[in-house]
Length: 254
Length: 289
Image: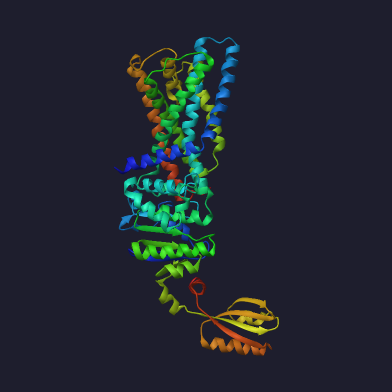
């Protein structure tokens, strides 16, 4: 009963802030888009095949989405601590982990719309069209759970150590590695790294024209297990680091 | 450290810098894990059942850093109510009433970052109130406010305690706030309670008399400053004003004698009202050793 009101409040706040800083959001998206164009047309000039180019579109869109998703967990937590509002989020009848989950869900709804617009813009500009079906939201959602798990770890670290921006930047590059890993190797490690296997399945769907029903139960199970494992580790790490922050009186001290 | 606050009571929580006030408050709010001991809010263990305890607790911590600067006044109020699980229908009239009471009606659509510090502080308090909890913790609610706004806020706190029966734990260095708003004060230092009593009782036990001695000419009174509790000495309009806190009548006459022995020409003596500040200093000095 109470939870849906809390979720709605967080969702509303997220959208109000986005609306108020829409130009900023637009400009940062524009910057990312320009970067994509450089990468894409750079590859095209080397006469890369259609499949590679399409894979680049999907990979780049996924990377943008992943970075946005985990930033929501770690950067925004740092921002709250700096602004002094973090304590207020702890003064609620539900746990901060749950508050974070609602915030993630709020941002996911917006970011997914942005992801689709981004993808469409990429297709129009590059002339390489992908097969967009409703199943994509399921795969993107499942893949991003692992990213949120990492976000929880980074969020927990930022509660204790405060300055973890360098780690966040390294992670942005790590995500590129995780996304391209399946194109470099077929080693089973791609089942264990975050977002890699999800990117393989999303590529099959968007580039190869697969639907959800075309995937085997094993394919989906691996993705689900991978994501849930990262989420579980992330939540456990966050809980542990939050406990340390409370013991040392570090919550909100920035 | 052990103390309790009864339902509907307004208690001042005092102590010098570094006494442990903010840490204690953060422990009560579940933001700091106490190394030992128990904290109960309306009978609920705030350490083991923090979430349950937070249903009844809201707090304004460290001044104006409790609100979202990008949201407007009204959006902040709606957000904090929602965070406590209160639906919009439940709070419509309450928001209206808070906007009026805090003189924020004209600023309801203004982003919090554009409000003055005083208004931000008032909004932070309004945001804590819109949560609708029975227990309110206020850490330095008047810090950095001008005299007028501080007075307004004090008036509102008083009204809040009287009309709505809220249980309030108030920490402040502003003794005017404490004296005006609180019925009881708890004074702590180095993690232990030095005094826990009604303001009136503390006044009678630790009462000191403040006097201003005006002496012709400019003096330093080194010797007198060493033997009497001189709180201030300054040169005003050709006279030296010596402010002293005296506990007994004898010490008054002793000071007059000492001044005479120093060759000082006494112009006049003014008896000042005793304030909570002097009582607080007295307790810290006497019991804090």
